[in-house]
Length: 333
Image 1 (tube, rainbow, N blue to C red):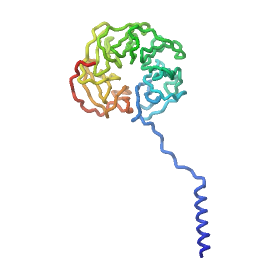
Image 2: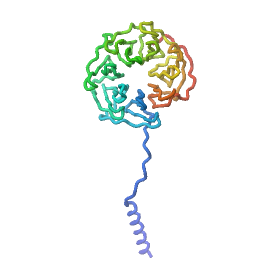
Image 3: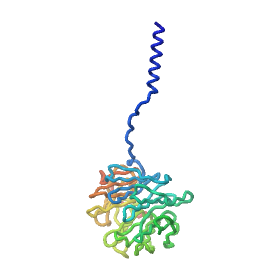
Image 4: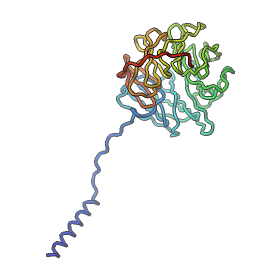
């Protein structure tokens, strides 16, 4: 009896061992998704029907279905450096992205693949903004007065001649008018550089503010809206006109903008705050988007709907906004 039991047990163990090591088809893996709700994104733009966003760890994502699905672009160098800005040529195929450590990337297929054109691991100042001039040249500006230009499609970069007032100031954004005849470069300590000849030459605007500007947008009649730190925004109605301070009800720093179809200006900024102006930038009201993130940029992908980038991911626009408290701004920068 004991012999029979032992034989049976041995057979059972042998069967279990054979089953354990037998080849089998593994279960299908769960579909991989990109966590666009959590990643830090610095900029978002539309290129034709494609939406493209860039951000932390060298991430570049694009969507061809208005944000329903996102695909990671392919980079020939994985530097994992922060990408800050992206811009495209009118052909919607050629574009450049720039970021920390002097990183410059180029695409020729609308953002699906990118090749490294420059990188400075040692003493590489961050590049903050990039743009294509009507001449076909590309320019980029950044921290500590760094400014570069390329006349050969990004193969080589040389110092860009700017007024001496730039010194070592951080330059945060390049902006242009709709016809690309008029340009601004804005930065810290109230720096405003202006070009009225399509970027061929630059001059310094007389100082009217001593804080940091983060961005600018063209308005009707060749005017400009410049905005930045602690809710400070200034409007120039026409070339040479006085810069007038916009009314913003709280000291919110703003970083990106969009213009809705009805003419409403939308600014996005810290604390998930939106600044809305229906009078061309003279006055703003505040609303709060979802969460408490720093909103970095906004793009409209259709009739008054689009996406907002932030340091906590992407969220659709318009969001479920809540009323924001109104407070005195004061005179601080």
